[in-house]
Image (cartoon, rainbow, N blue to C red):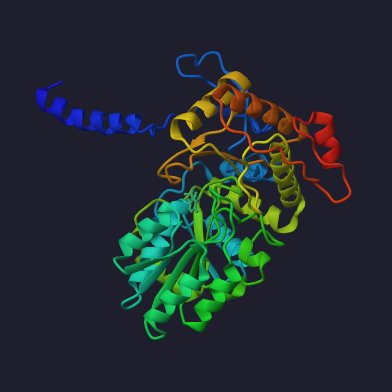
Length: 438
Ligand SMILES: *Cc1c(COP(=O)(O)O)cnc(C)c1O
């Protein structure tokens, strides 16, 4: 290497060294998912790629296991055979294929909106959606929840508009800001319906009511709710009956729907404006027909079937109860997310490593900047495809890891899972769990 290249490289090395010093350096697990046996997967440890080990995934955002659903796989095979691998271009240049048009119709219907637009990811849909909508409004003020996702923050930045941050889920604070801005000024309220790290849910009805009172536009990220909440899987706003009062819904096709892509659903004018002005939409190749077909099959299936949603909620409740009964510090919330507090980056990483190496359980540590320093955690995501035996194994493994690392237990809480049922005891066995689950 020439000496100049060497000095350049030193900058990158020191940037990495800094992350390592702060225990923020991320390592990836090389996994091979088994569609038929999810949440079981093969893990190939670094340097031992030839001797994979069977592990159980407990942190997937394929929340409902739709990535391996029969209907989704059939749709993929069919679309692949009929249309081939890629899309062949941007939407403007031969990339508008029938499966993506059908997907957009499906998504508009999902949210009861007249139009929808698909992007290559949820991240891109927030960047494109927020920045384009806000920048087309004169002197727009963006009111952003303090815990909004990075993709929304990047969208706000790119819009070039003024931004004010309201305290997380604090509608009184939001009202103060709305009032100060006045009814005449253009205002865009951006927030999430379900925050994925704490698993808490936004007061969507109150936000919408305030938006109407002060004449603001609402943009809600339902990424962690679509497929999983509402009678047809339309998300929290659908469940709360305020869907028609929200102006722009944004969602992903990569989590509850198990595929890839993101979208917005809104009025024809908003969708047409984003389609026409957003470079993140215009200058990139369309999702392949196969991916659009997968996503559409998942959306359609979950519009009709409530079975996955019911079992998902059930497994989340069961997991929370079993962990609490064992004295593990589960954060309280009313969603499907099960955050287990560690509160320290190094120990969080150690807990995750021990779970994988000693117990064949994969739960990625969640560190800064994804969550605040001092709130590092394990984020557990039960799916309908986990069963009671998986939960019993998880509890046993976590109790061992907590003991090994000297992490604090809370007072073991015995809470009945269902009224009239015997409560779960600490260190409950598989059969006790099964009984509680019945
Ligand atoms: C994951 C996520 C996104 C991005 O969605 P992708 O489809 O994964 O790009 C957007 N918003 C929130 C809140 C997310 O958690």
